[in-house]
Length: 464
Image (cartoon, rainbow, N blue to C red; front, side, top):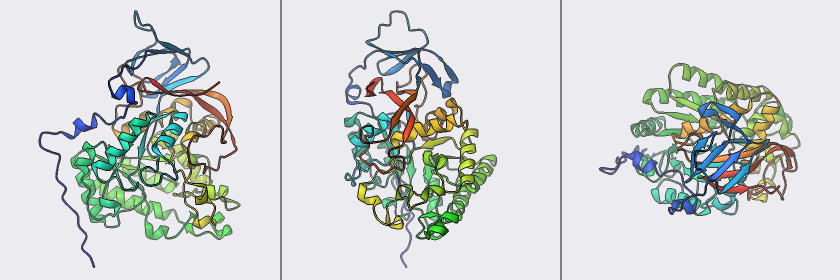
């Protein structure tokens, strides 16, 4: 039997506080990054919704030097280079996606940073966090810097890499979290790979807490999950598919919550999928444990019933669960128990979804459907529009600990302007992601982005 190594990584370099590096986290378009001044813009006649500042009103917005200059009346003498007419449209902070796999480096046949950040911009997403399960894994500063540099060159979205919690995501030896933070990793994560050894998990959370880092966990017990590919219930039984019980999530969640309490670490749970997990989360928050959670947008729309016909586009992890679970997730998002909604974007090549259901790759391409899925919930009366926008702006910004997701004067001018009534069909003419693995292919949606601004520069403009 081999001995598990906990590891004792060194702290930050002498004289260099972790916060110094964090100040450079958000990547800007090439022109701004090189010192070029962004143009002056006015966005007029739109419904401005900024949940972080409690704004929901018909107000103009003025931008200069890549930042929000003023809300409402323009400052005296302000002369915009361009005016965007947002009549009948919503103006809000750019969306922040807590989980989007860009596939680069290592799996460029599925997607690239350039292709997927272009899709993000088309979906109104200006910042996204990519998990560390790239190839090579984000467990060294070099890989983190490669990703942020490539994203900066593409100039479509800010990419915040999540650093690996353990070396190689193997769950045995702690990563150099301090140096990863200095290299631009705002959070630490194990992606889909659990830490089996609870003592290693404890030491990892303790070390992260030392540097004020949030740990992102995807709670799943691999032994209870086994080789499952669908929710363990009536649909999987009828289709003869190996099931994944709710306990695979709730058992792991219970363990992680207790370790979080023991260590005092800030822990964020990604992609919760069932009502029983929400009960445990609510109890932990009531006990004062510093925990938060998000849910994938498709979990608020789809259920296990969508697997009928062995639809491999609905092969997901965590799996789609019951309608009761979906409704509980919706209520948790409405009340704020779940403070963020993410895309959980996982682009695949076509062949990855062509095998028999259990052998297909789980995940869907989801950047461009994040907004319209939220608007479906608004249309159904599940959420009001400000709450829906909060869950993809101020909510995830607070989890990442970044000064984003709001439109206060002086903040980065990351904006989304969308037409809530615009109708469009998911198809090759409207889709930018390299991955086309979505169960919504061919469907008609309502709500489409007109402009996306990153650091005051227009990075997406829909032709009308």
